[in-house]
Image (cartoon, rainbow, N blue to C red; front, side, top):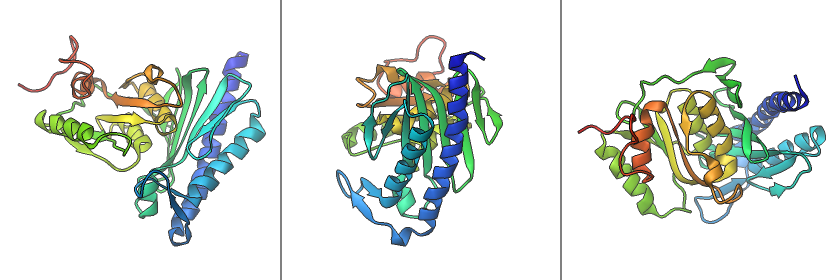
Length: 277
C-alpha cells in the first residue's frame, strides 16, 4: 500500500468511526427533542437546532485532532481551508425537519474529497443503525454487506426520490413531478436528500433528483451510488463546490428517462431505456 492509499484507508476508517459517534450524539438529542432550541435561517421551513451545531462541532473537533492539515466544509460553520489535498464535507444532521418532528428519515453525512473529487462517502442513519459507506474504486456497502445495483429498476417500476428547497422556484419541482407521473412513475420525498441517495445505492429507490443541493448534502451519497454500480450527474460540473448544483443519480435503467425529466436531453441517449409509448 503506497502513501496515498494509506492516507485514504486511514480516513475511511476514521469517517465511519466519527459518523457513528456523531450519530449517537444526535440520537441523544432526538430522544429529548422537547429541550432543543430551534432557530430558522431563510424561512420557517429552513430550521437549525442546537443538535445540528453541537454535532458538527464534534465532527470538526475530531477531524482537526486526527488530521490537522485537512480542510473542513460543513453546513453550519462553512469552509475552513486546509493544507493537505483532503477536505471533509459534512452535514451533521441531514433531514433537520424530520428530526425536529420525530421522524426517522435523518442521517449524518460525511464525504472526503481529494482535490476536487469525492473519494470517501459515509452516511449513518442512527435510528435504523444503518451505515452506508463507499471508497472510490473499492465498492459500497451497507453494514458491511456489499451493495451492487442490477439493471432491472426503471422509472416505471421503481420509486423516484424527489428533493426540493426554497432555493428553487416551486414550478421547477412541479413540472418535474408532472412529467414523472406522465411517464407512469411515482415519487417520494422523505426530507433527507443524503438518505434518499443512500436508498438509491441500496436499491430501495430507483433514482433521485433535486435541482439544487449543497455539497454537504450529497457528495457522500453520490459516491455511494457510483460505487454501488449506479450513475450520477458529476458534481464537478457545478459552478463551484461551495455553490452546489443539480443532483441526479440512479440505477442504470433509469438514466435515459431521468435525463429527459431533468431537461438535460430531449430524448434518451442511444441504448438507454425510454418512456412507454
